[in-house]
Amino acid sequence: MKTKYIILPLALLMLVGESCKKFVIEEPQTALTQEEVFKSLDNIEPLVLGLYTSWRNTKKDRGGFVFTLGTDEAQQGAYQVQTDDRQAGLDRYNGFLTASNTALAQQWDSRWPVISAAARVIYSLGFNKEDGVRKNTILGEASFIRAALNFEISQYWGEIPLIDLAKFKEYGTRRQPLPLIYSYIISDLENAVKYLPESQSDKRRATRGAAIALLGKVYMYAPEAAQVRDFAKAKAQFELLVNGGKYSLVDNYADLWDPSKPNTTESIYEFQFTNVYPDNNQTQWQMGSRSLAEINQYCYFGGYDLMVPTNYCNSDATAGGLWEQGDVRKESSIRYDFTYKGKTPVLNPSFGGDELNPHVKKYEDPRTDGSLSFWLSGKNIFYLRYSDILLCYAETLNETGSTAAAVQLVNTTVRKRAWGGTLPMAAMWNNGMSQDEFRAKMLDERMRELCFEGWRRMDLIRTGKLVDLVKQRNKWAKESGAIQAFHNRYPIPLQEIKQNSDLTEKDQNQGYLNQ
Image 1: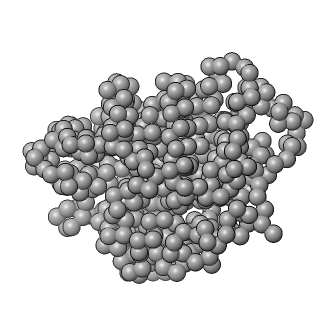
Image 2: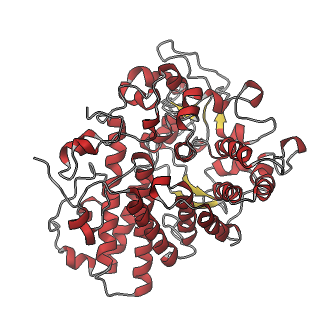
Image 3: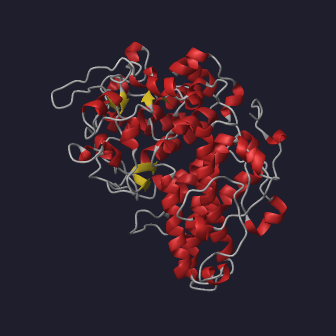
């Protein structure tokens, strides 16, 4: 028999649970009842800090990069593809990319406890009578986290359940239409903009600027079916940040990836990590070279070959790839040299042969070199940064009829920095380009600036380029030839279909079988 549940955040705020349907209504097994707990902001605030930790933890290991696999930007290393058919399906788009794909189900499952706990906080704050300012700040934080995760999941799976305890009898855990989903996301972010402070001494916590940035992106990224995509509204949000003076680009692009320089003027929101378990993030372990790992487990660019750049992403434009001569972002983003202490590792013939091909460099943490396992990487991970917002703002200028201004903005900010502060004439974009030409150039520019930072799949989906570009540029997708239009969405996990009493097999996304 299928069962419908409501989550109890007291039990799950600090944990990652199983899936959307695991929402249990019961009294907490503590000395306090739920009513007593939520009567005091002193009890609620630690729960919200737990939300931040649980949200952060969805990004800390391979789960943080699963959605970037299967794009034109990154793909799995050969050994990964050879040894894990289900995970390989994320790049091959073949018969292993099904509702029973565990790699995807894990990502679905890890996010719902956080969404549901945030929903409980939001609901319960309505009954709290304490200090208005503090209560509203907590409301803004819970609203921001719920919005961020609803936005992420809906981008990849489409219609999703809405967890609103005030309307649970009406909504249950059924998939809801996109206009309703995005109305909730926008409403949550509007509350976050209204109530969050301009700054937070605790960098784990979101600010008003983060809410404004994400609200602008929601207006820009929302699918057409959601009926809220609006470049003018997105532009208005981005202008608040561009004209506000709070954020600015750092002078040196490489400084963004220096772990000794966290939370710069460019950071709008980043997930906070350290080199100490459990606050480490394992990213360099997932990104690094298996061959280097054989040499020395303390080599900070050794690892597991989970995610490597596609040939398009790591090649020069003269060879049909992405990179223009003189762009400093290339060497900061991608590792080409695997010499370690004067030694270049020998390829192990059983690993697949690409262990010394270009690898992701952005997540390497040199602080671990020679003393800590590369599994203990502690570099922060960006969620929102100002250069992304500048590029988004330029897109909205282009889409609202100001292409020349958009070109000028990109030339004088993001691209200027990419050439060390002086953009050569040959690298300047032409102010007279067409709107369509700007769109094409911007898709490449976003890859150059933001590669491996988690936005590429969303960019391909919103521009309608996922199928065309992935089948051209992703080695494994090109090899299988299986990617189709329905792959713009992932399959609803089979266990969700089976265990959620509000879902039937007919609720599966088009193109996928429930197997």
